[in-house]
Image (tube, rainbow, N blue to C red):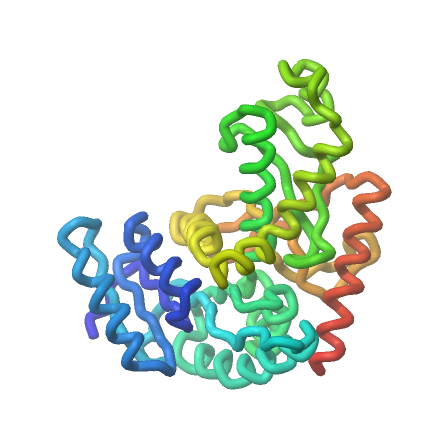
Length: 318
């Protein structure tokens, strides 16, 4: 197989993996995309379907491969994993997927040891930590999608509420990608104006019950996945686009600031756990983690997230 660059490999051709592959093709960031999956028949069908759009996009080769085909990848994105069964706890799911990672990560290291690893499988913070431990790679080279999607949901809902383009809203959801995530209201900005100050000049100020609206917006962000899954059975478009944004930051060496999940070391007394904080992301992975001056309630929320994720990590035997 001819080696084309940049090369991105995707482990898993489920809904998330394929939405990502499709968006990645359209964006034209990769010259070669290799997809690996145990279901070879479905994989070949997906790759055939994608490849037939070649006349209408930037040149990209899409390959249905095995682990050997990921050699010389710049980035390996892991979306494969077991789904949560009815009645199964989050900890039980984590154990199942950690066992799966004990098979997949050594295969990735055997064929593409130099590649950055981007973990997407849930529970994502736990499994990114597992990939870091199993791979033995520097922590900067193993990251997860973290709260990049949650943050996009947050900015979208704020934009709808305030009537402002979401590109001009800078606000973060941090901590765990899950039930203990939290909104950093103290740093949220619209066009360089702190959100709390913007409220006083907003045309809708007289109609807005600020604290109620804040709680409602955050609740919708936190529960979005549940609501989408209830309606259509899975979430995939939003995360697919979020993954493309992270990929763009990596392949283009952007030094972009994104709330990916990476190893926390002595921040607010928290260490040795993967959580989302604003991070500078480039060709080498996580260049730097920004340590925000959080308000007391936000600090407590961050510690609560750390406790929740560490509890699952311990129960999963990591």
